[in-house]
Image 1 (tube, one colour):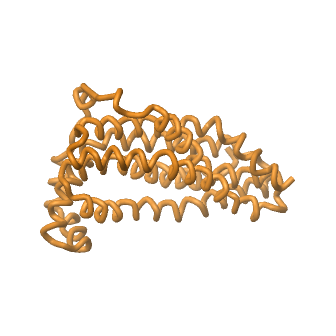
Image 2: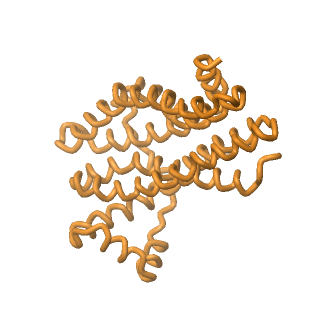
Amino acid sequence: MIIGNSLLLKLIIFTIIIHIIDTLSYSVRLNSVKSGNFALSLSLFNLVVLISRTANMFQSPLIGKMIDESISMEYDPIIEVRYVILAATIGTLVGIVFIPTFLKLFSKAVSKLEETGSIPNLVVQSLSIANIKRIAKNTVVPKKNMINGLRYKNIPKKILLVNALITGIYTIGILSAYYASIYVPDKRLAISASSGMINGIASILLTIFIDPKAAIITDEAFRGKREYGDVKTLVIMLIGTKLLGTLLGQLLLLPSAKFILYFYK
């Protein structure tokens, strides 16, 4: 492994953090339907997403540095890139394990936000030693009965397949663009900027096929037209296909890089 271990380790850590938070984000639908606090849930979750976005800000320059070092050493970093994709899978798995605990803590945080009316105050209170100890005691271990009786028949299967594809594309969007640049080093700035091309395709698919249907199911459950179990099933199946999508990213990496190269060679 020619690329520095510390650089790769940082990349892996940031990628794991990003995908833990992305995975936990799916479960916010459950809390918003159960508590009825849609606006408060969204407001608080934006704070959680901010952590993921911050990690993303650090991730891209690290990927760029890894590719620059590879080009200067005439080295193909395919193994390192695949390690980063594997980190996305690990982050998703860790997120899945922590969903029950996250939902419990998130529900309490939403109630606390309603009392304090201020996210900064909520953050300050949460960082107290007493609250940190309380958070540790509220850890919930996932159990098999949490997925018993899921209403699979009421969830459209097409959106699950599309979600797996979208997650796969998002997982390798930036990586494939930067990786493609090692084949045409003199155009690496333009090629690396093409990550928006890959992620743009994923965003279009997400907007057309996933978000509207998921929103309809969530709203219908909130209004009592659907069972809460439908939202629970939707969330679990979306998370499952997200995990599948990160694995799919391993297969999509090279085809995506070649797709980008097609426009520059």
